[in-house]
Image (cartoon, rainbow, N blue to C red):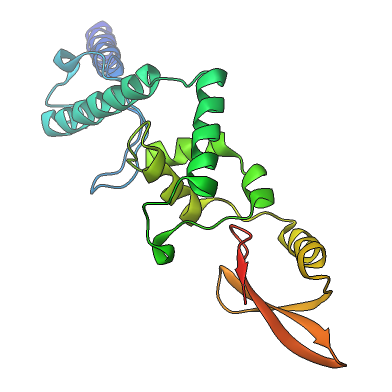
Length: 209
């Protein structure tokens, strides 16, 4: 009986030691095959054993993932943050380029904006997205092109367009017809008839007849 208790105690002690050994390796779940994964903490490769479900191959894969995540975090933490003064200078230069600085460009290639729409753009957010997409920092022409294609559409574009046409042509827009995701046709009443009047770029506010 004493011998049986001795071997039982020895067996439990061995299991406890093995559990402690394996517990020194902490790997948060991840997905292989290029899917999005979460950061992992690898503490002790020497803790791996033949009895552990975590193999050397899995360890190496997890360690590579952790190193890549660390590099990405370092890149983000060292990224230059634009000061308020620099942002204001960027906004001013971009507006000037769009509104008055494209004389060297042929008419068909010029970026066309309503000044009212341009003044309401969240430049800070758009510029951050521009850099994230690989845009060149400080390149005003490049940023202006990106802005024209990717600026968020103003929620008040209908109201702003109606107001602009009223002030410029003294006409009342009665409805807009969608042509695609960016362009709409504005209709007005002329001599009792509903007629198409101008085509509006709802992103930039620019319109033409």
